[in-house]
Amino acid sequence: MIDLDDMRMFRALGTTHSLAGAARLLDVTPPALTVRLQKLEERLGVHLAVREARGISLTEEGTRLMQEAIDLLERLDTLPERIASEHQAVSGSLRIVAPLGFGRVHIAPVLRDFHLTYPNVKASLNLSDNPLADSAGADVVIHIGEMKDSSWVAHVLAPNERFLCASPRLAARLDTLEHPSRLAELPCLCLRENDEDVSRWRFEPEPKGKAKHGKPVTVRVTGALSSNDGGVIGDWAMRGLGVMVRSEWDASALIASGKLERLLPQWRMAPAPIVALLPTRKGMPARVRLFLDAARAALDPPLWRKR
Image 1 (tube, one colour):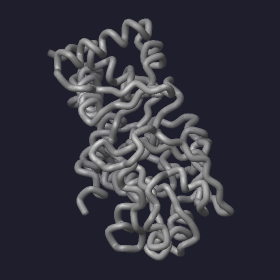
Image 2 (tube, one colour):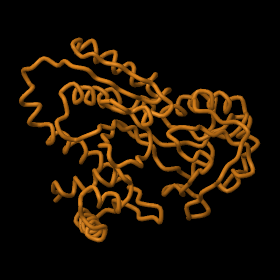
Image 3 (cartoon, helix red, strand yellow):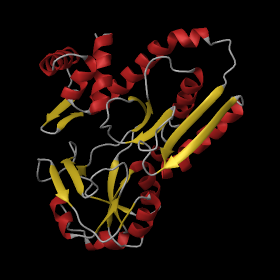
């Protein structure tokens, strides 16, 4: 059986990707949280998380539990307001900050349709190469990837993996590439976003794959080209100028069309889920809740996994 404390634990783990960080959010000690996690795994009979030196990563079962926990807890947290506002007109202002490419392709249509349904809401969409840096005054920040700042409350909107890609011509030259360590010898294209260290690429062997080396690998890559725009990086990669790491939401269409090929499929990078960040979990306005519902509905299933 899973209780509310278990769900709160997995919401915190999904936000921080760290036992210590989750323990701080829940105001408990890391050893106590570790014991609780172990007991939950024993009750369910599955592994939910993998402990690593740099933090914790959730298994497929753990990720599903985290997403379900976030959804259920959000509905519980907002139940009083949903009941109170059921007969009230939705109005007020809604300020959303989103990444450049993803915001233009996926969030702008959601906000367009939201406006048609709730015309009394005064909404704005700010597209940024670093949404968190431009988050002052935002009601919702759309973020892709892990969260380092645990002060935000994350609501998962959709799954998203990261793929290593190259043009077919370059991929043909790299047909003997079997291990990520060789990337240090190759021209790589770096995408600068969210103040991350773009020159360090970390890989883990795909559990169902046939990677010859079972340990995680971190590679410091170099290259003469970098940009803060994913579209620019993608164009350079398609022209054979280097190897790139790109989110599944963007790369899947290019791979399906034959413009890019995926490299090292037997290795995986850390997933980069699409999340909506809210400054607080208390008193979520109806307009924010309804926008999150609309975004989830538009991304379920994700368009990049329909192909």
